[in-house]
Image (cartoon, rainbow, N blue to C red):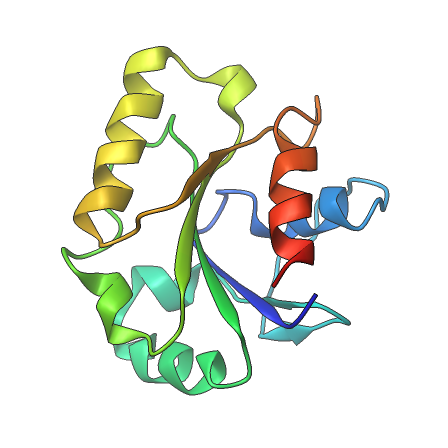
Length: 143
């Protein structure tokens, strides 16, 4: 597995997903800065929510081989601009997080939002119940 960078707003579960994928105890840690680990780059949610930080995301993405756009389907706001995935010169996949807590209509809206952003491959997961993590993990191992 190469370096994988996670993007998503505050509270959408980027750090939790990394903890689940690396089989670490799930604990809440607010990411205050870009954090590099063996295979992941965890970014603060503020970097996606405040466009002035887009330059930092673009620069940080140069260290990654794959970008993950992460969404919590229960939060209904539009996060990613149309075609945003094309602004990264890397493959981008989508991950819909916390699916065990969401309604089908919320998951469908999240899928549409990721597609509008230019994401073609989308995984649906739950770090707590571990639904979908094996499939996502196998995909990431191939990266």
